[in-house]
Structure formats: structure tokens, C-alpha cells
Image 1 (cartoon, rainbow, N blue to C red):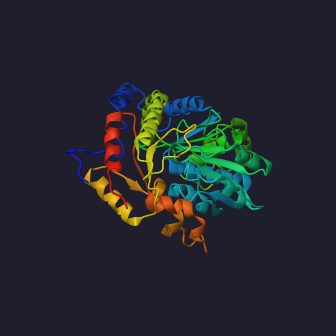
Image 2: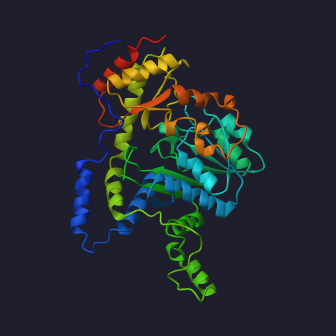
Length: 399
């Protein structure tokens, strides 16, 4: 198959930092008379405006989505103790790493092929007396929640944690994802729906968790919690310590700075508009993709697409290799395995933590691992280019 598309290319991400973002940052650097660039007023402003946009009471800005994961599980451990946490095999490594590093046992549930998120039936099957939480990842803009799942977790008093790093603005029952769990995490990595270059946000409606994570974000220092009556009590109980240097937990500095917050504030202004464009792009892509070759029956209600999930219908390695060859020939950048490189159960870091896993019980995620991809979707992408991409993909002579 040879199509005449000279110099065609399609990167995973167009530039996510605009001239407007740069201008806002230059203005801040130029007119910030106090020259305070570490965590300060702009971080607080960004946290407050993000909370208002999301519909959450509290938000904590950190230096990455991975740090958000780590602090979330550390807070869960402190508040609820350890046990099992049900996690998806299709997610970013830090979700599972945060579970392991906080002494929880990861328990895996296979995915729903129509959402790429954990299948509710599989989750419910894995719940037992040791289950502390379900840590759901809303993959690539899809919703992973259902009424049945939420009702089951409520009845069994199991904590819901949400990873919304790839799904800014996605909804369930017209309510934004990230407002259902006890704690939710967002990433503002360069290629996501909005970016602070590097950065993440932790959101909750629980005041105690909010204060705890503020402490954990800043070396475990008491003075960061923001609860002055609590601070006064701890200071009184520790008269031999300097009030400014009381460390409640063994923690690290996972704060962010003023400059990323300035970029975040500017990007937040156009997030909703950009999400509408991303969703329209996604729908147009699916409409024009050959349904005989590729999966197109995704559940789109409430979705806010991050990247095109390109999944071969047939589990055929010759077809897979041909697809990759064609995409490389036309400079269509791709990632195999979708989120995080595919099935995390196959990764080396997990071998010492999980034993006797039967991969045959994870057929859906394994199909994505070997025959699933994502390619770029972003607000500057036009229908004309989507049609060209679909023409290339539909013209492949599969077996």
C-alpha cells in the first residue's frame, strides 16, 4: 500500500504550551516585585480555581501526578491502615508503585474493552474482608464508574480512589470524575488535557485528609497543615522542639512552584473549550475508521478524550507488525499498549510482589498490551488530517 502523502507526519502531541502561556509567565516574572517563586500565592490561587472548576472542596498542587499517587496512598495508610487495594493492570506505573511503597497489597482486576478501565464485575469479585480501597484509573478520558460499583463500595464501606490524570473534564451522570472518590489525582504533564509542564493535583472533600496531605507534601512539617488549633496542640505537647520544625511523618518535599501555577491558571481558562474539541475529534476519528479492522464500539458517554485508542480487532501479530510499519512509514507517532505500556502484570518491577498470576485471566488487558495503541489527539488537530490518518490506516491490507 502506497499513498501519496509526501512529508506526512502526526506527532503524539502538538505544542501544549501556547504563546499566551509564555506571555503570562513572562508577566509574572517581570512584575512579581517580591521575587517569590517557590510555593506561594499563585499556587494557592491555582488550587482554589481548580477546586471551583472540578467541584471539590480542597485541592493540593504537587510536582507530578506520580507524587499525587504517592501522597494519596500514604494518606490512606495513615487514616485507614494497610490491606489490599484493587488496581487495574492497564495504568501508569506510579499508581501501582504507590500501592506497593505504602505497604498495601495490589490486587488486579481485568479491564472492560469498551472503556479500558477496570471491569466492574471483576472489581466486585475481588473484594474481600482485606480490601481497603479500589484505586480506579479513568484511562484516556473514559469513565470507569457505574451506579452498581459505587453502591457496592458504599455498602461494603470500601474507599474509592480516582486516578483522573488522563481524563480532565470527563463525567459520570453529568458530574465530573474526581468528585466521587475519597481522594482523586490529576496530572498536568506536558501532553495531557492541560499542562503545567510537570505537575499534579490531589483533590478531596475531607478536611482531615486535606490537612494531612498538605503536611506530607512538605517534609511532614506540622506548620504546613493550616489547622492552627491543631498546630497549637502539637506544639504544646512538644515543648523541646522548635515550633517551626516539628516533623509529624517521615516525608519529602513534593511541592510545586509559582511558575507552573501561573501556566496552570492560564491553561485552565481554555480547558473546557479544548475538551469539546478533543471529544469531537475522537468521534470523527471513530466515524471514519474501518470497523472491520479496528475497535470502534467504545462507551463515549461522559468521555473527554486524551488520545486516540487504536485497537486491532484481531489478535494477529503479522497484522500488528504491518500496522506499525505503516505508521512508521507515514511518521504517525504511536505508543503500543495504550496507558503505561500495556499490561503491568508483565513488567519486571512486579515479579517480587505478585506470585502465581495466571495471565489467561487477564485476556482483555493482554489484547491491549499486544494489539492496542494510542496516537495523538489535541485541540489543534483538524478533520482534514484525521481523514488522512484514517485513509492510511484503512488502506492497510490485513490478513
